[in-house]
Image (cartoon, rainbow, N blue to C red; front, side, top):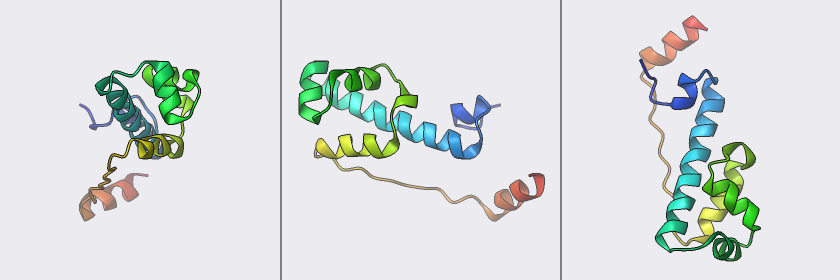
Amino acid sequence: MTTGNVFEDLGFDASESADLALRTYLMAEIRKFIQTNNLTQIKAARFFGVTQPKISNIMNGMVERMSSDYLVGLLAKTGGKLQVSFKQPSKTTAIERLCTS
């Protein structure tokens, strides 16, 4: 059975798995931008104002080397619009978690 978050399924705690999932999502959006615009890593580095190795880390999914703040900053440079949502847990689910901790 899966929780819907691969990082939680791998054993990371809820906080860390949420952070990893967020960074993975942000990196995927940056990769999509680079690929859609047919940018080489060097051209992408110039566009974002970073080094080519940073772009390589993004393209290769090196999530542990990037902070969410850093990735949001890069996405802001694209001119796109970042939308954030959060689904509140049901009261029952929240209470069950407290009681089983």
